[in-house]
Length: 198
Image 1 (tube, rainbow, N blue to C red):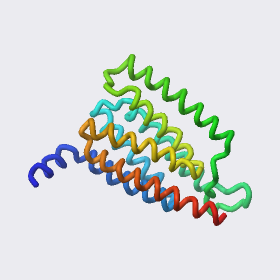
Image 2: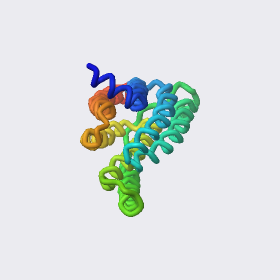
Image 3: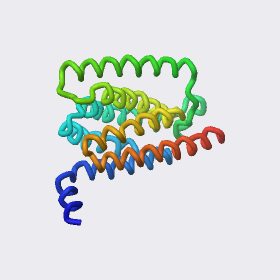
Image 4: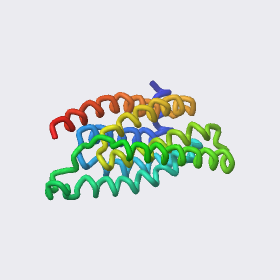
């Protein structure tokens, strides 16, 4: 028990960041717009955690998460063009053209970040760090647009992240991404029901 308390006292920011992120994903599954406020707080905390652990792309990604949290808040609160009402952005399916564009953006960002990390940092996992970072960029943009398939992108990103964080000894974050993986499956099914009702 003393070892657990000692570990928590040494990693308290990571523990708080994980707790805030759990709230974020639960609110996301339930389509509650307050998720974006939790996303902003989580981004700040995880920038510190990742920077201290050598996940430089993950650290930089938190700046993007902070910005997309503002965009997501705005987008989820704007009036829906079809109805003119502000009753929330509806869940939509990924269109083929948008999917192709997002896949292209993902590959370009992945390659660029991997090259930067490999050549300009001491990262020991540049390709994998770049993979999860570029996947997170695409998935969060899709979340801000309420595209159903963002949960599938998160399923892949979160699964890969579990191994990376376990390898780095980020146990609270490993647990968090295990939770994220389960919630991605639940979120997909919950959002799909909403899609079918609209």
